[in-house]
Image (cartoon, rainbow, N blue to C red):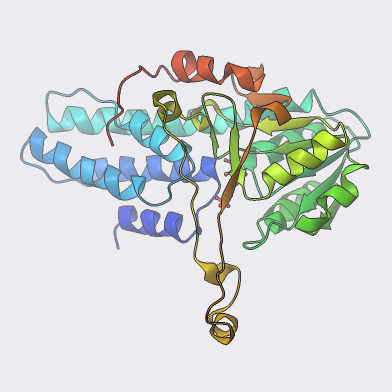
Length: 309
Ligand code: RUB
């Protein structure tokens, strides 16, 4: 199996998961594909690299970091195959290192909002959110983290592992226990799969429930998101597609056979309205959700035109 098909498969089956990781892995796969494509003409090269782009693009529909990363890597204007190769490799390298330093920068910016003694609730597993928590802890702040399990794929356990390895006191809770514990929480910090032009957040299923409980309890709700998590297509009026995964993740085939008429639904993400979000920490600064338009047009430099698929 080539690196390209292997990466595409790993993104599809969630061996590679989390919006930032997916973006970096896809950029790397495109870079490796560009390095190894055999082509007699620039047209042939363009066709082959576009096929690779499409294969990666179609792996998972919700995390906008994936198409954003792919389009950034594909921004080349070349006169020859070698020239195209070089530009794609340089674009991918720049994207990957920029993405890694963005996560670090978000950690530094977000940590300023975490005070000594805070209890912070988080959901699923986000590298950007984890970066804020570990940075705050490294700065000597005595924080406690409450991590939700995140059914059905239990990504909360990845968060627990990161927190425990960092030495941060951590409590694991059921997803359904969020409201029960919210009164003990000083801040909620979550990651992002996509942010729409009107500042709504798309993140792991259950995030919107956290935001409601936080809103009710007057607990600030902070999002950690690199600027490539903002969705240019929403500027064109499109909605972000919510991935619905196999029901087997929720209930085994065996159990489902017992109740043949039972419907099982498994949306992987949900939408948190911008009015429940206090702050979005990006590498370009901590901004209110209302600034999403600025990020898309000024920071991502997207023009109001139909981006090519
Ligand atoms: C992961 C998820 C994460 C975001 C942000 O969902 O919802 O909160 O992707 O993560 P899944 P990061 O496990 O289905 O990919 O900050 O690491 O990009």
